Amino acid sequence: MEQKKILIITYYWPPAGGPGVQRWLKFAKYLPESGWKPIIYTPENPSYPLIDENLLKDVPEHIEVIKTKIWEPYQIAEKLNKSNKKFKAGQFDVGKNQSWKSRLSIWVRGNFFIPDARVFWVKPSATFLEKYIRENKIDLVVTSGPPHSLHLIGLHLKKALPTIKWIADFRDPWTEISYYKHLKLTQRSDQKHRTMERDVFRTADITLATSYTDAENFRKNGANAVCITNGFDESDAQNSAVKNDQATDKFILSYIGVLEQLRNPENLWKALNDLVLNNSDFSENFTLKFAGRIDDKILNSLENTSLKKHISNLGYLSHDKAIEEMKKSSLLLITNFPNESSKGIIPGKIFEYLATGKQIISFGPDKADVATILDETKAGKHFSYQDTESIKAFILEKFGLWKNGALAENTQSIEQFSRKNLTKKLAEILE
Image (tube, rainbow, N blue to C red; front, side, top):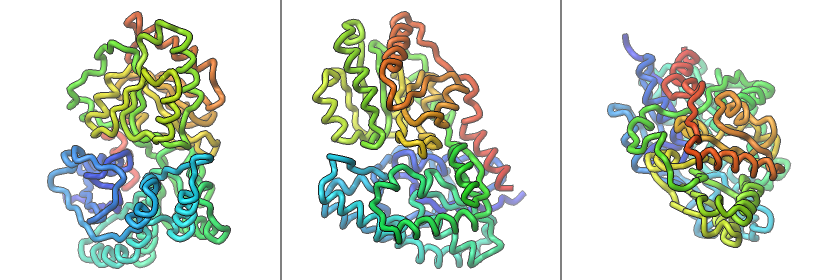
């Protein structure tokens, strides 16, 4: 039986690093098993915030990848101010950490590049792909954002080719994302963002969300929305040299990934600082490990506490190495934005955390989707940014179990989040 063709329009593709690339890389890996032939459309000369050459080995051997040139203003912005590099990953200086250059750059980014700085790729891509789709009998188009400008390519193609099926995949929300309010938008710019978002929601045949709450919010705004979360790939765990149950000689609390100022769990640092000052046993055995890109302002603030001598900062690691560091940990940290509108964000790393069987400590708004997953899988506990004493109690409980060699592995109800099972769910929706 001939496979149906699915054209996946994505900005992030190996050697891009970070979480944005994983979703469609893994879907593309497993879709052929369900009768779909993925074709990737991606920029030839992108400006990626993170590079991970190791992910190239995950690209299916015979997959067709089409590339065209993109022009991005980021290179100019980075010459004006080095911290502008953060914007590519949706990171911002906030509060007292904002210089006038930061404020100006954020204002320009929000009001001149709508919806984002990849908008200059929309028209040439739409023109190129309209011809490509006609000539290659594509059955279905997927656009994956952010960058949300890619959904404008889908919008153009759907209007030009009404019979084509279009899925708009939102790895993160658009106007509901927590940093949206930090963009210093004029009323006119805000209206433009919201009009574009509404057009995408109402024109796409299906809108995919990565969390239950996001899907619900998208439906309220006129989208035919379905949730398919991110997940973990069993083969990543199987290929790792480190076993899940490997014992550690220190009680290691690890944060793996990018940590910016808007998701900084200051109450956790305070609780840990109190524990190392007042509990000599904990202090002798504790390590706080970072593997990824941690904002300099966060690291500098920790340097001024008693946690300084307990920190192990490994810097950015390849995806394979990051998974190894998760497995070498006793407790894994996940953080979300504190505001209620972010309760639907499920950071992709939670699923790889789950696959290790390690316990998870999470921070974010009350009644978050992450809390639902942790409760369902019995894999850890979610705290708000107001909690303090209960954090200490949780950490000491896990520390006590670790000391007694009884910090149990947990893999309850996690198979629903495997990439293979999620791809089967996607294939059902595609049909």
